Image 1 (tube, helix red, strand yellow):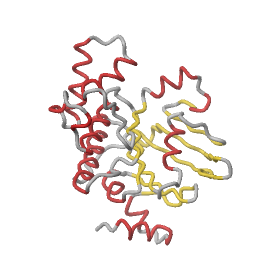
Image 2 (cartoon, helix red, strand yellow):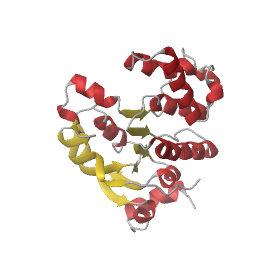
Image 3 (cartoon, one colour):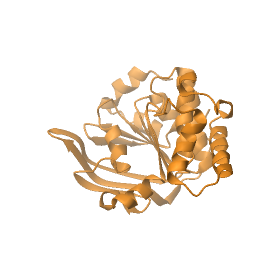
Image 4 (spheres, rainbow, N blue to C red):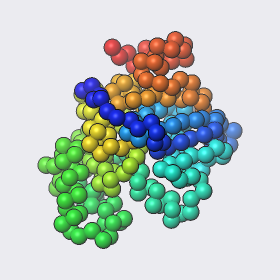
Length: 257
């Protein structure tokens, strides 16, 4: 499915990153990166395994602290927030984990109820039920409400993981390798879902991937991370028309047409 025409509000920055550095001992993972993400924009951070992509989104979510630089999310300087303020901010950020992070001891319904019951204790049973049903409908899995995670395919588990994230109505979605381990057809379905989520809920998203098909299908803007820095930024076509030899093997390995 091709991305539909949409409005990106380039007057409203939802994430602003400046001169971001992060090291682990002598391993310099991020070496001074800048990034702007605007309201309604899907930004793909593309790079090989181990290049710091997941470290970046953990810093954005306040799960790791930077060594240097600033990360501003929804008007808040993440590193300076108190624990309580950070928890409040995280409720506005949806984190879709690579492994879906479902609780195997809970049904699909219970997995989706869990964040609501933990963070929105004022909701009535009817409101919780309605939120669960709407989230499952959004990912096309209403029929799976009483199933166990073990009964679901890999693609279905990814969808349920996204539904559980959507149930808190986040302003920002962070996707960590959303197509990892999936067959090509299911990967295409997840790519379509990422676009549908953005259009339906007006989210802004960062999609971490090394899958060029995912990058081309979902990204309004690509930022290519190499050796701790963004070496190219722009649309998919702009990035891969740049003639940058460092990207050629990446493109050839993915072999997309």
